[in-house]
Image (tube, rainbow, N blue to C red; front, side, top):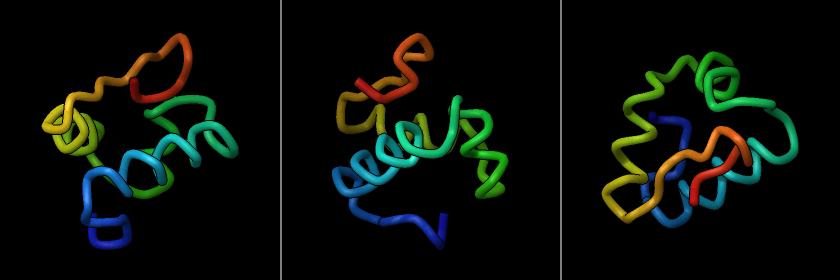
Length: 59
């Protein structure tokens, strides 16, 4: 995750913006950044957010 924000709140904003503007799914976002999906999910779950596939965002 070296290319992504370290602060979880800024990470949340960044990921949701990327999902909204460029990627139709979390899988595609993670593939583009060569990240493990579980890593992002764990980071954001730690601050109370989970991925909603129907809305393609963390809520």
